Amino acid sequence: MYGWIWRNLPGNAWVKALISLLLILAVVYILFQYVFPWAEPLMPFNDVTVDNQ
Amino acid sequence: MAATADDTEEHTDASDSSPARRGRRPGRIATAVSVLGEILITAGLLLALFVVYSLWWTNVIADRKADKQAEKVRQHWAHATDSGPGALDTKDGIGFLHVPAMHNGEVLVEKGTGTDVLNDGVAGYYTDPVRATLPTSGKDGNFTLAAHRDGHGAKFHNIDKVEKGDPIVFETRDNWYVYKVYSILPETSKYNVKVIDQVPKESGKKKPGHYITLTTCTPVYTSEYRYVVWGELVRVEKVDSERTPPEELRG
Image (cartoon, rainbow over all chains, first blue to last red; front, side, top):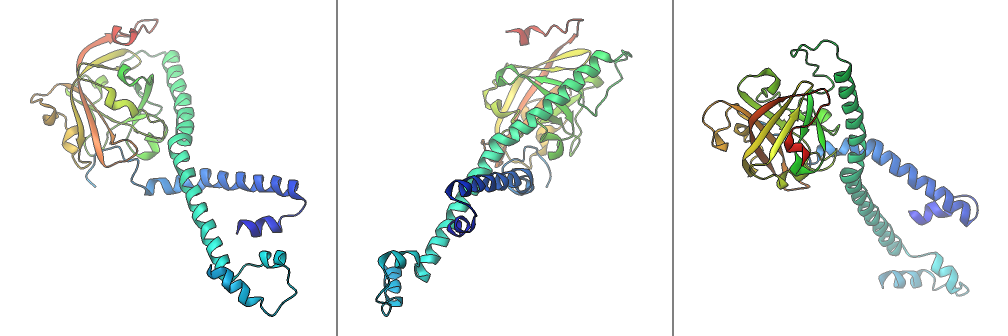
């Protein structure tokens, strides 16, 4: 998977490394901004109140 | 080993294939194993990132938001021209909670205990299932609050450092409400709504009075149980022109 991505990136090793870094940053951004905020309430880690449910 | 055997089998007729070329074209099983490995590594990274997100990033976001909100409330207080004690703006926050034993400065208190409120790095007072009695009302009752133990500001992270006799001070525009902790329940069911009753019997109180209740989750990093701290009002101090904090907060 990662090998396939690396082989399909254009340019020499340095360009590939730079694009990889940008890709990683983009993925982390999407995770922190959209995926984790969505997933967090579904996990039983952060309920602090007492209630009837 | 299976992969190598498979590889060799495929290339037995191609006698001219060099070892280098064979290395570049792994067998199907080898490919499957390496893809599986990469998926596992990805899953591990994802979980690690989620931990970073919940324990660090949500704090950054929540603290930023809470600071902004707190400043708004302070400004609001400073600029308020009508000094009627009844004028209470609950939208931005009603006051600040100071618990010296928790070593986390002041915590803004807002209305409600939904995640949309608490995720902003504040403490919320209960509106459901039992409505909190605000100290500003002057009536007998229980001022019940909740805040996050971890992540989203983690305002009650150090709740286990609070001991009997420790002060809890609630600051409003006009008053300092000084409470004293008299009972602690380190672990109770999350369905135990009796702890936020107007007269919390589990704390040992039988008669109506001015109480404060802090609830959060326990043990740390999970929501298995609830941790409860009860306090009783000791005195009310008028806020002076310099907002000199009461002696409990000066130490």
